[in-house]
Image (cartoon, rainbow, N blue to C red; front, side):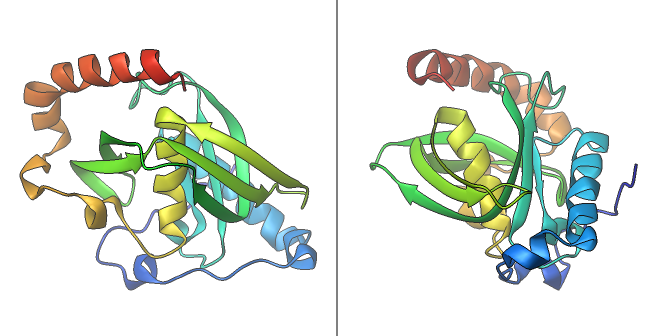
Length: 191
């Protein structure tokens, strides 16, 4: 198990656009080790996902998984997914306001608008192509992680900076209302 250091906001690597990975490069032991390290790092940090730039690797790879995550108990389950060279298409204009945090922005949360319905095309860790429709909070989780591949942080998408809060203050003042609102949303749209 290899847990890598997670870069924090202010590190210029987090603001770079990542490059695509060739099929041959993806099959290399180095790239497969990076994927394993991303999974280990995501699990160790209780993240819902992590992208390669967050550990200092500017390649278009991210891992996503939600299974009884203590940081995000309201998120629907997402099986372990390795996403390589993803392309996202918004299927409509429906948006939802989500309160997000990020492993690269420690102890900070804020409200962002995310598309509710997306199509994501990507290769898995073995280079096999996938095209999937993602909805609801799952779509938001994918958008958050894939933003990292373009040098974006959730902070760039916060539409009202008054929503920025620490984890402690979110828990104290905002969590109950958010959980109530987002639970109703999840019940309405599913994942």
